[in-house]
Length: 122
Image (cartoon, rainbow, N blue to C red; front, side):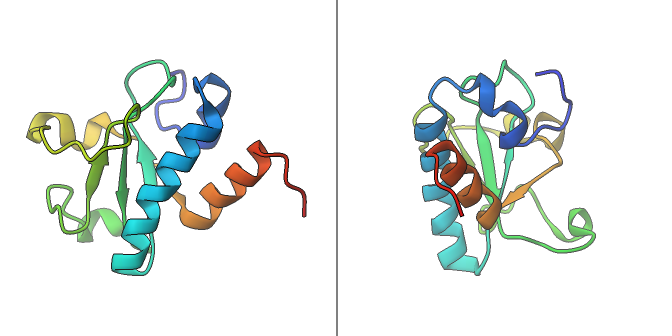
């Protein structure tokens, strides 16, 4: 990926199946939103952006990096971009902060992207 901190919007043209991918992400975000009241998603920075892995966490406003423990699975869930299953077998190395974009999309932004991909208009 050319951008060091991309969001799904930045790589949507490189996704293998954009609608299916965004639907899978949105489904996992919905689980987080139901549990915590909000959800955001960041994608992995490695690879070519065809089916990037991603992680979902609640929307922590402001200086969230000081408040958020990326190893705390009560808030942070990493998912395989191809299967959309939680990446439970990943260890600390795969979950390290430098492997993930530090730019997040919130639930409404991902919903809007899906609508755009499906050709919905306001």
